[in-house]
Image (tube, rainbow, N blue to C red):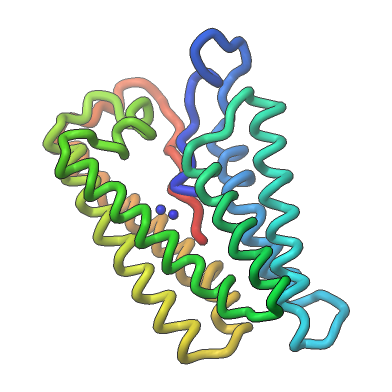
Length: 220
């Protein structure tokens, strides 16, 4: 979704807070650091290869908890997508380790992307653009039409990533699936963001003041 989503840099930690929001670099580290550690643990953990996915899942869970704590203590808040991603990582990770069944951690991204897509679609249908609520400050001047188009595009991307995750984990090795998070899902997300810029500019996005590019939702 961290669609974690989770997570544009904001000018402040929240109403009434004196703590500054995280920079884009820090947001990226909080959102994508855990998945990088998951990848490294799955390849480098000094245990039998068949057990590495469970060690990596434990590392993933601890890293997510650390990211959430750092966000709360340093910036006074945890972004909605980071919350959502963290809860799913902890829930599916716990079941994976408890049952010693790697299918649960593998199917988690499918459920995450599908749920986020569903929530965004529900927001569009009910006149409450959830993407705008989360990332509004990151796209100054963007018209309602622009937000609707951007939300539609994110929905399509999340559905495509859910389908792709299903295809990969069901038809390839665990190592290939874990590696795809870094060499496929993350690059595809950033390319998607860049590809949307011309459309956003046509629908009112202003770039008059220097601003940091908001990080995308976390890759699950």
